[in-house]
Length: 275
Image (cartoon, rainbow, N blue to C red; front, side, top):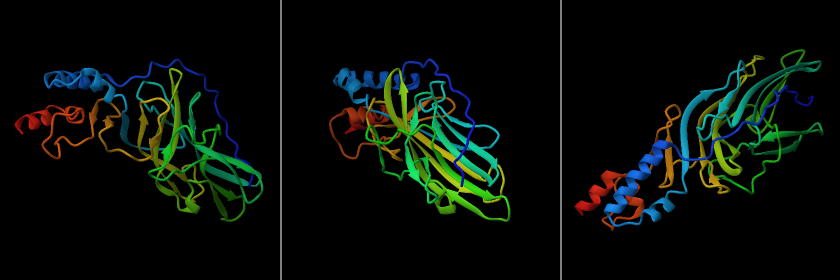
């Protein structure tokens, strides 16, 4: 099979906004800080405890051959990553595939592979849930592909290639490792995707379904693929940018008002006061 060919428009770096948590989250932290002051807890300590946050966005979007699917990971109005359906016709047949790559200086995790035919290609890694994504990951390849179908010119023969092809069956709920740069600082994240292969010789034979993505707000801090619960995880609405904590509101046992309890909101503080 011939090396994949793709025509990519040059991507000019764009000026980015200073990386920051959304205004809605800032309002929440101000409320928590007032509650902390009423309980005699240091506002500085509360601010320090809120520095490590994983922001998770739940979504449902499907790739199409007619236009790319962009991911604005931190909802600052600038696209960070791109999923792109591909199609190429050549003398030996034609290929239908799906690519993933970072805009500007951003990268997706991947590595170079050697095919059975002896040539090398760059492919995006299909990570399992629980994989650690961080500075030790491989983000060296620039334009890796996810999956591709190759059809012969004559007959109905085809072959599949790539970590996301799943030996022709596709994959479900795998993770793209993401590395992106904001205001000169490196952050890590992930995108949860399922990929299906149709084998019907059509433009949309290889389809990616994006069901969620997350990023770590602390520069250079690793993130765990697929983790969407815990006291340091907040949910962000993909359209409004509103955020809310994903931690439970009720403390498991009577205890002094801790930073974690205060961060769960007014209801939790009221429950503590009743104990």
